Length: 184
Image (cartoon, rainbow, N blue to C red; front, side, top):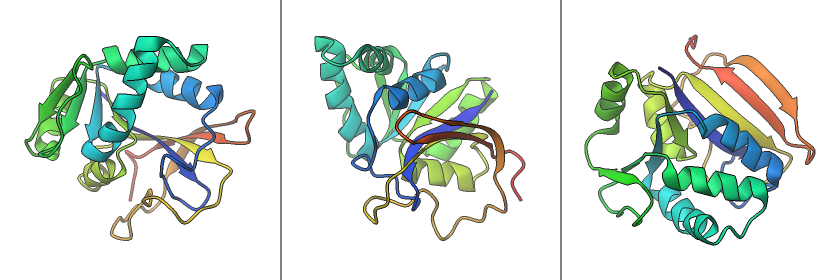
């Protein structure tokens, strides 16, 4: 059972969805992460941003082959939306969960489920601080911006990330995998 945080971030550590090179490399990287997991976890902000767009791409098959596959997988994969203010998108295979995300993820870990936190920086930060995230899959973007939420907050104490894989993409992004289970 593994909890993976999948996210894109800029060189400056910002993870707004506007500051990415949204090419096939990005979508292939995401597909490699979510294809075989049991459940995707979403915070409300990320869900409101991603679900309507990717639902349309899945329905219309209006993207590239990689985008269409990503959209279809997002739609079909079981999703948990942690929110008290958002509603699941119809036909998006989403369960609304208003309980404590820490307790719910602990339960899912006990059920031996493989989970991916889809972006959702605030949700991921809470789960990391509770020691519930095992791996970070980061697509580091060759972009500098001060916009967007920070990937790591000033209140996080991560002594060192253990790099397990690095690969450049054609766009100049770098796919980085880190093991978080050995944090200090």
